[in-house]
Length: 313
Ligand code: CP
Ligand code: NVA
Image (cartoon, rainbow, N blue to C red; front, side):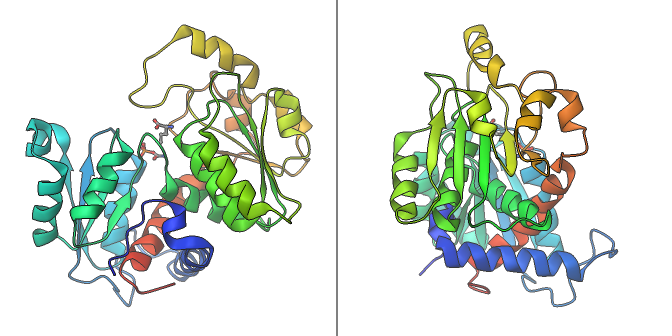
């Protein structure tokens, strides 16, 4: 069976745990090696990853490219605007063609249904590099960063502040798999999709962990081990003054961080909009782990790729 990584549930709790363990191990094993030097075992030697982008990217694009290099393989990019996809060639036909050329396909798209269509017609692994609905690769890197900060995932409280978006959906999904709580501080009208919360809370039944939506940002961060935010306007969304105004009480300030646990860490998937979703004093402050979080995209991608090729998990 072809292993697609469309969401965290594609790998399940055991699969994601194996991915995290591999990411941590390989990161530790190659400290101080030049970035472009392959790992000694080059486990994906000869493999090529096609990366399809319908939206902009810095981290996802570079981390997948470098991941393939470090695993001994290579990657190529197809931008929708400069490939036949942008002129109306179907996702299904593109999937069949790319499967003949490449060993795996990563997709960043506006429409989650296109990712699913790519997976339905590809005969090689397909990876979700962000859709309008979810961003599972980001959350693997986030979980790795939380673990590296010395915190265990089960029983943790993660506070989300801002928009109920794709990144939050994947955090909620992770909570169900790893038995931690998420308090989503979100203004009315911007809630995450209910199905993600329901599914995780079903998995959390019988544990002390729970996913909740809070209107009061102070309640959301109260006792939190991790405070997370993201842009208020995601790619593909219209810039709306009304939305920015609704989000303002959920801006991550020093006062909100002070209401979390004293050793709470701050995460942001980036790119950030300083003085919008987070103030500079927090994102550049001592509790911020954003640079390690960004670097971990590389280590997480490597492990996700290895999982897709059946090498772990
Ligand atoms: N966090 C993230 O996915 O960044 P990019 O949009 O730069 O890939
Ligand atoms: N929610 C953001 C994440 C960017 C990495 C977006 O979809 O634009």
